[in-house]
Length: 233
Image (cartoon, rainbow, N blue to C red; front, top):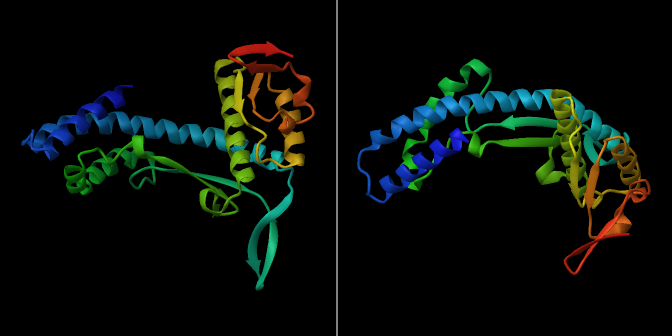
């Protein structure tokens, strides 16, 4: 929240500078220093969080995929071979980061390199508000080469891993909310996921296609929304 407040103030300054309502460029330096301090802490915590949950997310992905061989391919001896799916994750900040102790210095350098673009665009281009996560299946970018089923499986694996992390941290099982969770999953993955969710405490699944629910998921309480009313069936 503190980062967001400073970011809004700096963006307002940059917009005014671009529109010639503000002429003193050094006026943004105080905002920049605050963003680097706050953003560095956010990046460190994000990287630590992802490192904590990723092994479990990878395990969930392989379990939901049931170790199945699917249409993922790689070249071996000039022949395409089918391979088992393996999820990989990489945190992608807006500047190069190798070690945590380098974050603050590289953050400031990135601001210097982006100075002309920020003056021209009137917006802050560096920082965790623009960071991303890159997901890969067998070293292929999931966004470019993954199927919808693979993308949904990866999302579920990350969500379940985050749930386990929070349960351990808070010593209390969170309520899990899922929307159209079984869409794009094949029958095997649907059945496995249904069984897995049975063990996750209280789970709410919203769907417009009841037939896509796995057999075990159908055993829970069902509510239908009709004409702005929630009816238990």
